[in-house]
Image 1 (cartoon, rainbow, N blue to C red):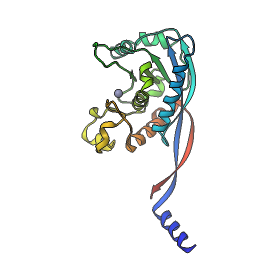
Image 2 (image 1 turned 90 degrees about the horizontal axis):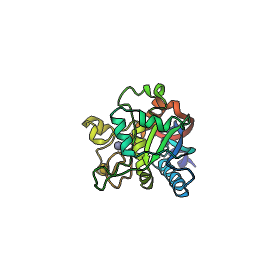
Image 3 (image 1 turned 30 degrees about the vertical axis):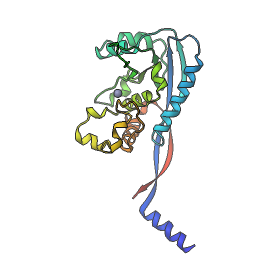
Image 4 (image 1 turned 90 degrees about the vertical axis):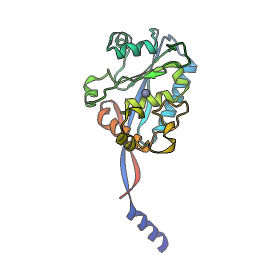
Amino acid sequence: MILISLVMSLVSDMHKLEQVEVPVFKLNFYLMGMEEVDQKVTVQIGENIEYLNQEFEGRVKFELGQLVMDPNHAYIPDLHQAHIEHDRTPINQLVDPIEVDGGINIYLFETYSKDDGNSAMLGFTPVLSAKHKLYAESSPSFDRLFISYPGLIDKSTVVHEMGHFLGLSHPWELNKISLDMMGFGSPDAQRNHMTYHPEVNHFTSQQLDRMQHFALNFRNYLITRIEMRSVLSES
Ligand SMILES: [Zn+2]
């Protein structure tokens, strides 16, 4: 009895229980080029949400919002080309008639390989490189992920794009200090979700902290609710 209370008091000396805010987002999926439900795709959507919640566990949570079917169609590389040329028309024509408020909008399109090679663009996410406070007033223009149907099969595409959505960059875009701050020093860094490695498997805890902070501060206008989580932290 004495021993237990001694251990307990030692533990409480070193750690304190902290309440952490976990933002919850709704994901609206738009099945472009589809007029009726494709069971295979809806199963893949469920699996992608499950994988997102696994990889963001304890930091950010995702729930299914609406599933929208729409016969209009385009190809991911063409939409990306229009996006980098600042031509908003092709995207706006597709999304304006169907977009619903209050969530992260994930548009699904087909893709193709541009250079006849093996690699086709699997997805992209329009983001602001600075002035992230402008996300709220630009809504819903920057509340969108563009994902290819093949990108749904490899569930890491949505996780990678959600990384961009919540403020992460590719490691090759970061300077030495930022790389250290994001925890890229470890040997398994090459399999980080923000790389193009074919077998990615993790975010660093620094990246997860960054995304949680980013979600609460710059994507707060999209948060459905906040859940509280208790964590032991060193005092
Ligand atoms: Zn990327």
